[in-house]
Length: 306
Image 1 (tube, rainbow, N blue to C red):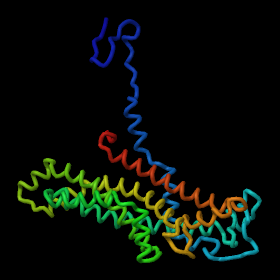
Image 2 (cartoon, one colour):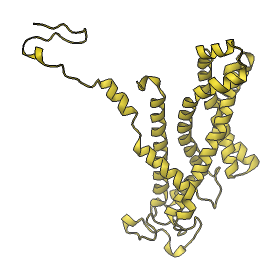
Image 3 (cartoon, one colour):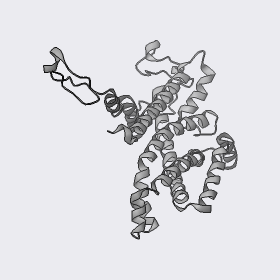
């Protein structure tokens, strides 16, 4: 006898009628479950990035400016080098591994300072423009568009020519270049959130604007803010390295990945590791930050949490 089932299943008849229907995992659920898994590669790389930035000077085998001309241009360990310098030395005999560790510290401090300052400026402008609206919104957004259209490299050259080369100036340059991205994206979130029912109800019950912003608007833009921070962190690392490579960033004698790349391009024939090692460190770190940011973006999407 045929047993009628719901519209998602076929009719069971014959020898299979007495068997319980098999349970299969819906592919969509498997995909969403996989998306929620912790990205171990990017998490491990970022963990090492932060720990090395904090404790780097205590674990580095040599100082970042410890010169030994007798050991200059020694290859890495796997290419005939020694355990004293596992990643080789540069043209002045400075240990590449130690300089990478100190450069990691510079990249971490600069990038974190940039995303914090730029994020704060962008959040304030986004909330003011999106929640208040009107002419103030138009003025702030036209200012944001102008800042987005201004060339970062030209701005960096003018700033450095006026105020000189320093780590503080690198942070200022990149923070002023990055805040428009936060303002533009987060303003759209504020415009969406302020039209929701719970915000309208709070305003109807007499809640003031600052209270609504603090209790309702700001907490609901935090997931988007975290995704932006994770993505902008990688851009800040690349931007700091690019400015240092061009001589507009962290000044010597401080070690930076971009500065090491600039020094290594003159020895590609007899000391290729001088450029390859900082390039690999920079690439892996930026890749990890982008993968982690993509993981945050996917998990902040409510459609992937069911």
